[in-house]
Image (tube, rainbow, N blue to C red; front, side, top):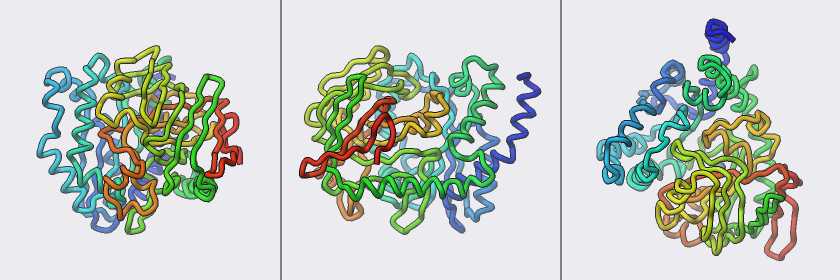
Amino acid sequence: MTREECTLAIEGLSGQIDKYAELLVRKGLCVREGQEVVVQAPVECADFARRVVRLAYREGAGHVTVIWGDDAMARLEYENVPLEHFRHTPTWKVEQLNSLAEAGACFLFIEGSDPSALDGIDPAKPAAAAHARNTECLSFRNGMDFGKNVWCIAGAPVEAWARKVFPDCAPYEAVYRLWLAILKVARADGLDPQLDWETHNAAFEKNKGFLNDMAFDRLHYTSKNGTDLTLGLNAKGIWEGGAGRTVDGTVFFPNIPTEEVFTTPARTRVDGIVYSAMPLVHAGQIVDDFWLRFEGGRVVEYDAARGREVLRHIIETDENAAYLGECALVPKESPIHQSGLLFYNTLFDENAACHLALGFGFDECVKGFENMTKEELYEIGVNDAGNHTDFMIGSDDLSIDGVDEHGNVHPIFRNGTWAF
Ligand code: ZN
């Protein structure tokens, strides 16, 4: 396509992009009359962010705060500022995020980032910054973890990202193609995306319902690639997926797209070996072709053909970074898997395949979590760490069995998809 054709084609998508923005505001954020709305967006996505802000006001937002991000600026900071600086979040930033969360804001995180933006940067710096933010901005993090604040993560293209996903296209064509791909996998390419998301959510309800009714004690994963992993589930654990719900009953979609049904495994009951099925992109750096061996929940051995150092940083970020916080089931019919694309972005790639995550677990995956302290949740098996890093293990031949407390085995996945 010529540059002119691409410009016209993107203009032609304008109406659909508005429908997507509306989907985020209405199904992702559920903006209420008079509410504070926070939109975090890359400067390159200003046009899309403005559409979102306009719609948020139309839906009744009282005030919208926009927090701009920029890959190039982040890189300059990591290049020039010593590690020590990143061990703490600046006070004004803590105050900004905490005060907005305490005021009952809803948060939209628009992701669009060059996956290679931080190539060659000491991975300890972004790891320390993420850790500091997760442990110091407590009202902000707990507001989302404990169902007080509504939040939604969604994607919008920036050129460097688009070029990574479509390396054979000219930059302008890559951006157009990434818009098409995002609208498609976010199920926002139809006449009525909001209605499509209600249908999508019904499938989640069915799959979650089965897993929650069966209340399995543990899962057993096997694949031809060598994966043979037993993963214990919490006695009070619940499977989540699709829409989330705040304590005051607001139903919202925290991830657009989302294809996963997930829970938090029992921190100390993971044993065996698991092989990666896709590259892991972490803070702009890539780990590929890797495996992890667990004993008593902890990673005791690992290796990677590429990015072993990055993997080491993830595992050694803090004491609990070597334990799992998530296991998620995604069938291979997922539109993201079907697209055949590697997005180099967790929001998209984690919805391509079954995955696990190292680091903190999800409080809301435990019955009665609202009335438990972080310590109590940790005690019953929810990992508590500064980071949370997803990695894909869902090979096309993956089998997963659920084992109940009496040792009865029920198939959950066969050949990479639901088996019940
Ligand atoms: Zn996940």
